[in-house]
Image (cartoon, rainbow, N blue to C red):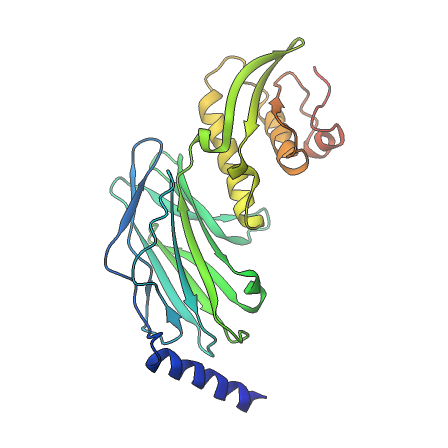
Length: 274
């Protein structure tokens, strides 16, 4: 089997080199998107650290700048060696990128773009096709502005596409409305979640969107005198996100007791008022 596999890989490589799918470095042009605060987030095209016949970039950067997003996809082929790709972010005012880590310190293939005040300017995600269980992808951040991808494809038997997405969503991207109302005797932040917030390709992307949407809610409302009981509000928000997505509107009410996340879930996201 090893001999057959080697022959297959050599055949694929020969097609790649001589059959019109020739290896290519990313194009020289760069692209930018503009954050809510007016900052230009510039980044150059992905590039391979060592020229490889097992990776193919499109001839041009894909500029899917649908208001706040840019994506770039490239294809990798089966190989017995690892491939390293860099995506350089070009910052001018002390912005930086960081990978998201969960409570167990496991790194996600996704993260945040922060300004020098540690406020979120955007997100980045790296995703693959459904064949991803046959592809081992790890990411790292170098010098606060270079995203490194290490790709191991020795279990692959066919090409697979990898997509990098950089977005700079604002509060209106996450919610169609976001207003204070009165429900009975309770003040409530009432919001209608958008399809962008509720629809994600995988758990990592979903998690980053949830965190970023919450952070933007805090930034908007933390100077309002009615905004209090922050931990309790976040438990209500996370409960709605995880278990009540189909509700037409989410209502977060500071007067409801902070009983912890589990008890908030058991109370259908609405603990009793104080």
